[in-house]
Amino acid sequence: PQALTPASSAVTVAEPVVTLTKAAAPGALLTTGGSTQFTLTVANVAGANAAPAFDLTISDPLPAAYTGVGARVITATGATGVADTTSGTAVGATIARLDPGGSVTIVFSAVASGPLTAGPVVNNANLSWTSLPGANGSAADGAATPGSAGSATGERTGAGGTNDYAASATATVTVGGV
Image (tube, rainbow, N blue to C red; front, side, top):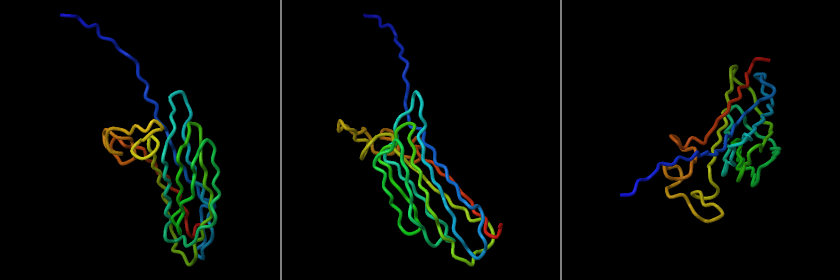
């Protein structure tokens, strides 16, 4: 019989590290209503083991207090395939690829028509992304992952469990706090 000598190798897994932040200005409105400027920023951290993120989807359905959304100004650095998908008061965007060190910022105004009930108006934005480009991780070589997207053997999609490529951010505007 032949004896085998064990060998070890160091493996580094490069993954995207994506963040989502949200800000509101001003942070307060009168009960008679007003306008709030929201800023959403998606960023992919740069670094030695950084990787691009793919198929990013931003979803920001505004609370019922907001009845209108103005034009969106989208600024992108290190990103390709950026598209505004806003419909009504559901602000949204897709990004095909976000490279390490890249970011996309979306700035928009939303109108809250009065009368408004005093108290906090909480606005949540959500983000999901994948680890590979295209449907089911089909890369430029055309080879797809062995499993379904979001499964243990497929690309990571933010579907939960080990597929944790998702983030959220909140901005709160106080009504009657002016």
